[in-house]
Length: 119
Length: 107
View (cartoon, rainbow over the protein chains, first blue to last red):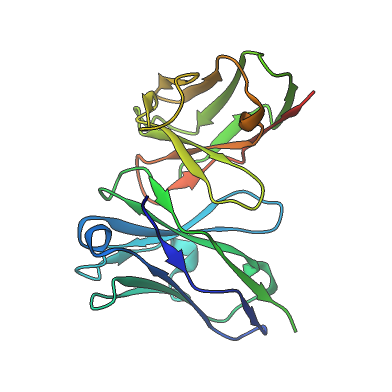
């Protein structure tokens, strides 16, 4: 059973930053790419970007350029997403997911992390 | 960006029914389409990729078809555990995009 284990829920104020982590097994970390997807309350799925955890190479949609960053720690098989200048509409469940290739479906997902932005 | 639309947005069906729903892309994406199932409070689960290839472990009552701009997901005989929301995703080009979903509930 593939497991991607994410960090716990976060409550942040507007303008703050948040970091969510996603821990994988060594095998998954070394052989897959990772993506981040979010889901606002009652809404659909939105892709936030992807990272090659071994090289650190990452790609984000234009709308998130400058506000999202993705990093990895190869020593603990963990990838991270950082989102800056939080707004209320960043309130969502954030998921990590893995894919075998850059242009491949997401065959395993983390359990999700609730991020709430509220004053 | 490639936009995906799904229809219907929701449907009511009974156990044993054959149901189909559609995903349309704003431009051709060959067969770079995946389908996911999501239940409330859970992460999405991959059902089908490359438009018609069943993910390992997914029951054979699920099938996908289509190419280019129009795709279909069919459940041949709806089971109680199939009541969920279904999303399509295009993997043809960045940024990856998802459709708005089709919610299947019990009639």
